[in-house]
Image (cartoon, rainbow, N blue to C red):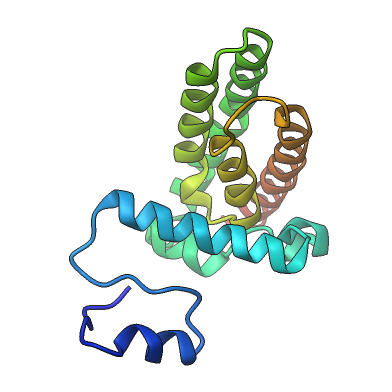
Length: 166
């Protein structure tokens, strides 16, 4: 994101290595579209999710620290809540698939995405964005299973993190 919006700024930013470009002022919808595009491009290029590479890459710890002000007590509390509540969100997604209810499915995906956003896990975010952007539910089972694997890796990494820190 940049305040530079002059002719040629977009090209210079992309040439310098940025994944995409958005200039201020932005709307939440514009930002969401750019983030989704970048995340989809990352998955397309690698074919792997970050958790496939190893547990050290599940959480962007620097980003998590920034989002929580480095407060390990807050991280521990958020982790405890998330570990208890995410299975219910996945259950709601599965129930929506059984009921063939696309609106409820998207609501469940969106709610879970919001719950896990703080934890700065690109791979889990990419998995939930893939689900939330489905046009129909025919591919949902495979993607939900992928998401569950990502969530397991994320919660394991979070539990490890909070158990090591005071």
